[in-house]
Image 1 (cartoon, rainbow, N blue to C red):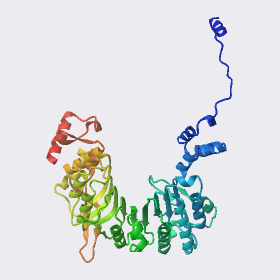
Image 2 (cartoon, rainbow, N blue to C red):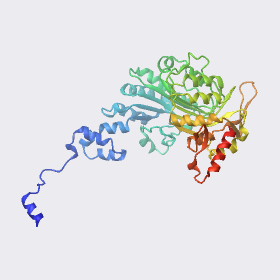
Image 3 (cartoon, rainbow, N blue to C red):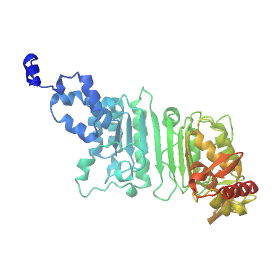
Image 4 (tube, rainbow, N blue to C red):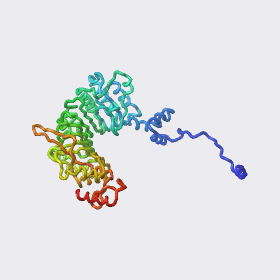
Length: 457
């Protein structure tokens, strides 16, 4: 009864007026909402009406048109040119990748390719990165966390069953044609704005690669300072690579992989070849001259942020000093170490297996450390008992007429891995096994661990 009296005294509000519409919101709010939608929902959102299509253009352009991937084929280049001249989406393009994948006799149309690419580069005034690579047009070859861009014309080309754009079928001649077309078109476009080059040079033919003429005028005058990222995989020779490294003065990301010859880094003169902004260095399956590598690490000790070394051996030195330099790098945020090769065992390395497997309780040999604190902890643990262990398979390298250098050992990284995994900690001036790893350990056993640790050191 009381509820009835209240209802009679206070009238309920009437639901008058039209329901709330998303189109009543300011366009800026709608655009902000679009930034929180995933790709499929954003596409569906744009299909509702023309107004929402217009309001979501910025979010759609930034999401899908930031990176374009094309190959030297009429269909792909035509799609790239269409986007480049689009009134809305062209302004969102920040990166263009041209993949070394050719179809049929498309390499014979070099002048046509250069002409189309020239007008594309002239039209896209906001491009910041131009990349030449191997396989990015094939989504199956895009790995890691690298952003996969729109592959221009792929839908139309995939409908042709006879089409095969696998990079494995590209010859060395076609490979060089792609580089020549892209670099010549960039040179003709005379771009006023700043952009950088990324090169992914990957030998799939088994013969020395010379993708372009390093002594050419357009490379020396226009592009040698613009090469910021180099990924190089060519087991057949390193002479051309050395010339490229000498010519490039502003490399910031250097990745060298699987080079069978002894790699000469261009650091014979400390004052000349200094990449002031090199932050990313990845070396995999290489043999290096020790002195040149030491100079590289010392010169870049204040700029390197990412280091990856795997299966690396030196001529004329050990890993002791390089590891010490890494410990002092002020900007280092990521460190990956695996198979650091040595010719001979370090002192006290005979007890390595028992010491690490019992004390550190880990068999991990591949160190991944993120952040300065974890990197310092891992390297401190490694230096506290630096030693080696035998390789499963001996690796050897011969330079010229010299005798072969054989690597029988590798730096034992298990203690560094254990510290990084928090299996051991530095307590009371010693590295001891963490108790939470073995909750049933007794106090007597703990004292035994400390004693064995002290004797081991």
